[in-house]
Image (cartoon, rainbow, N blue to C red; front, side):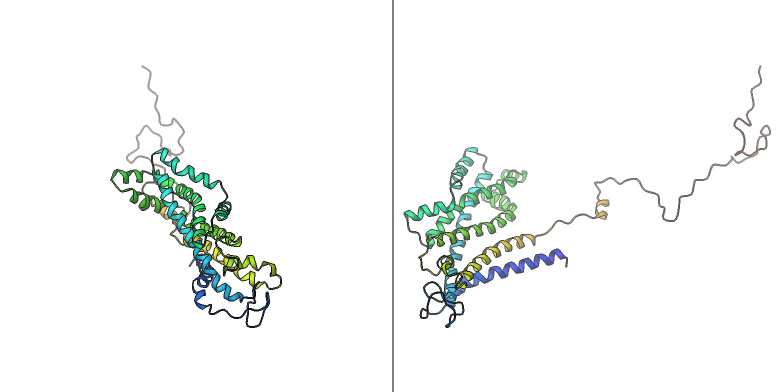
Length: 333
């Protein structure tokens, strides 16, 4: 097991722990909350309240068990609704050949993207009184433009590839081309964006509930608990620390889980030296002499030709004979 694999498993385990604690409290907390007890003094500890009391004397731990479900369900529903609308818009904008259709789909989203998200939520809340479902719809509406542009940018490279043109020439349906090929090629990018998007949605939902949008002023909600109990934070810090830490753990766990899941994918192996030399498309270089047993020996010089020496040549060694020796001049006529 390599150190990289060990680190990825540790990050994955840490992400699961961070995400499991707030999710379990949000989903199973109302089942374990029990009946409300008598109220005590505000911002006190003890008296059967191991986490103390809040600003109206209610048990903080019971409010924590009851307050996670609105935040978590609203954030998850808003993220799912945003991607349900952003995926078709982004895929259609990236795969269409009609410029006017792309402009018709993207330009209204740019107008919504220019307006701050929290301002849109507050303006709608000033006219209407949205509940938890209305807040999820509002947050999904303001999250659609950014998500749609992210989908379009992630799919644009795959949409311009020759494989998409080949699928179209084969008569494949638009859904198969968009989801089966282009969408799968951008799956890792969209998964990473989903973790960041959930964090932004959680921040927006918590801020809206903090400002009183979508939740009653005394509702059992983690964001409302942070808002209403901040006046006694230095007297009884558990009323603020517990819901704030749970919101932070939920956002950090979602991001770490997406990063760890993407990091566990298959990695491309770098070819070693043996693989590079064994490639048939690469020409082999000149063979190098083998000097493992010592320096190479010089080649032997060619000796004299076999046979009797002519009589007109002097009996001298061929190696020491002077140049021109053994030559006979032609007699003048």
